[in-house]
Image 1: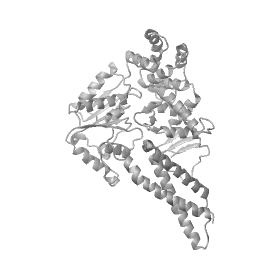
Image 2: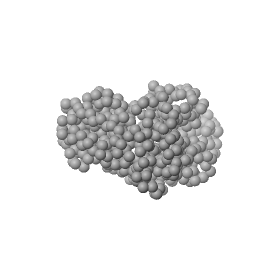
Image 3: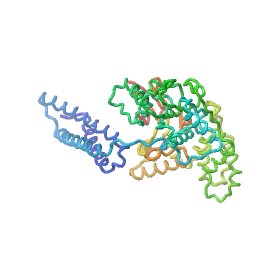
Image 4: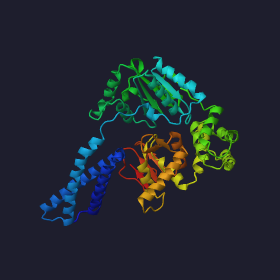
Length: 486
């Protein structure tokens, strides 16, 4: 008796066996691979049950399965048992609960203490520590450095011992209340998975309310009013020693969430902007600081005092011959108009577009756009970038995986050097600044779509789609799709 897909099942067993060996030999990559191991293990388990049921049905009809099917079944059974043994021994030993890093994990290593930011830092810390402001807002346009400043506030408060704990959570758009709640609970060491989902917010509220000392929760990148009670965060007059700092682009969010104090973060002063540019652009090019300053002032003016635009552009120019800087500045000044974006963001779009356009590697440009399919603040595993880069054909026909991997890593390093991708400390991951991602999606709007909720329909012209909702349609026209990431 022949079984449909029999060859696929045999291949699946082989791939899972290879993966098992890899997991045992490389436990240092445990966090990166365990989800994939679980997925393939469950897939094999389900296929085993399906094939076993088909065999039993065949026997009842006096039909005999082929020898290959019987051999596959025996091998699959042995492999499933072995995988369960490995999971119960090695995995449990490696994956024991660990204390999560605090706010220092989010602090940038190359933070520059700008004069124009010191007063804002002081205002925020004082507002949170004086006990009279349990809800504080930090508002500023995209790219002004709100996240960087908020993490510095958290770091200073944590080191001063004024609060028992500081929790940092990225909100993004659209907000995922369940994820926000889980992030906070995990940093408090509160397991929610054993309770009914309807009780999660109550459990979190109870844990926070019972703390004797002050707790600071930083909600970064808030786009709309959040119901803190639904999350499980005590608020209002009975805030139970829980203080909240939100960062947002919009003043209306601070008003809607009734921030008792809102600090407005403006663009950098000319002096701070110049210092930031020189910090990222200076290299062994033989020029004096005075000569570099004269060239840099023109670029700084075009960046509009926005740290993310300055850092990206300067990092790109760093590896250029200085003789080409004037040509780059002329290109920047006459660059295309952006008619379909916020007027406030035109300058940062121009600068980031120049950084992208002058990547000296077409593969780097393609990989950069591909990375924009992930949601805001998504920590992208480097191994996933390698698989997508090779699978998407960006690196041509790759006969040797190791050679292909080396190519992808080289391009990834080029993007990190240009600050178009950011390293995630202590993880084999990278991420995109939210404004850089916006620009990348704007550039790739004809080809890429990110679907985060059931209200968004798939556009049939898209080649690359990230689908992050459970409501997958029964039918859709995906004839032009090359990558569908679920």
